[in-house]
Length: 461
Ligand code: NAD
Ligand code: UGA
Image (cartoon, rainbow, N blue to C red; front, side, top):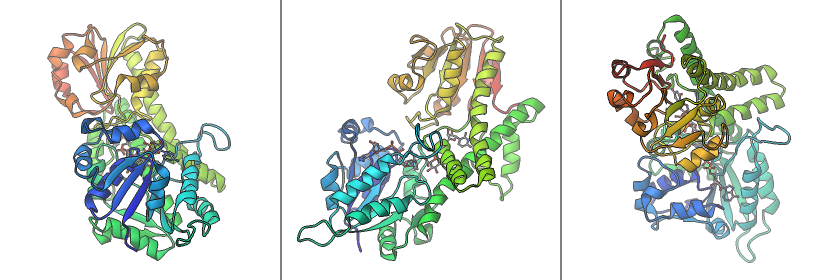
């Protein structure tokens, strides 16, 4: 079966960029991305490409090439499903906040709702692709919902039938476009060979066949959770060693380089920092922990739980040491925070380490001046709430504005522009003795020291 029309439910960080690249690489396929969120769809349709709801380097160019040609963004969910040969489910799957499994299990209400919409609106044969990250065996639920609608659709048309595939997404924010254009691999899980080959035929228009892996449904669903758990585990591992480096005089960058030179370990994902953020690592590990508990594998659950715990500890540790270095109190002191996004090259702040660190400092009574090149003040407000009082923090327009009268500057996101800051200019604006806390190992420490700043860098003994 050759695919001519695709509908993607969910126009978020995954649905938007993924479908834009499919449309770009497959000019013969009409791709419609639908969402319930009118404001988000309006932003995707904004003639000004700098206003797309997701900031990703290179995304504007891809959307600019395809939008209106074979890439469409719409809130009209039902007709887009009805017209589609293939429907991607790319909706959010956050951690449940209440009920059974609260704090661990994934909240599957949006995946169930979108599966029900497909069941109701699809016509003829439709391949349904799980793009969201899901607990193992979710495809069983999706199949059950679709099977209940099978055959009762099309009056006079071909009977309604479905095939379900798992096709998890491995893109990382900030590098979504290159990750999608040259993926290490594409993973397709399923038990219907024709459906698997139809999806492989879409990716095959730009991905070499040996990079398209085919597995059973459950391996595919579990591989996604496992990949994120292994990646996050490396970060907790190196952050644990960073703390030991600080205590012993070792340097975590030298240790990371030394161990990463072993080809069995590899050099990637060994950067110590303020802990991992992002919408997925914590959620996916907690999901794995919940699944292990469900299957009675309590030791396995505890093993993965510790990866999340170490991450939270690292964030609180950094806030604590800032307080300690500033003579044990930050009450009423102005602190400059540079970087709020969970990593560079994204406007996403979900689970950003900056949130936990800023909240801890606000609770200690600090006054924060926060600068991030891409995160708007309104988003910082959503994330910080009223901790410390409404006037306890302000968003500012530049690093120079942030450091005015500050006792310390904290680097919490590795934006490239922070690598070339003029420390003599910044230090001149700060109250002395002044500190630089570089949680991302990005700044020129020698320049900061020469400007008279005391410096702390993560993992530097
Ligand atoms: P997101 O919150 O940015 O986007 C999800 C969108 O789905 C929202 O705009 C929401 O309004 C929409 N939606 C929910 N229910 C809907 C419905 N019934 N009909 C229409 N629209 C609906 O989420 P995201 O970051 O794009 O993540 C989506 C999934 O992909 C998650 O499972 C996530 O774990 C996974 N994932 C995310 C990333 C990432 O980098 N963000 C990477 C890989 C995988
Ligand atoms: C991560 C994975 O890398 C993707 O493969 C996956 O598809 C995605 O999660 C997902 O499922 O959502 P993402 O969270 O966008 O991607 O970004 P990463 O580059 O993985 O960074 C995650 C966090 O770890 C960031 O806060 C980053 O600063 C931190 N990190 C990363 C480190 O502290 N050290 C490192 O060496 C690498």
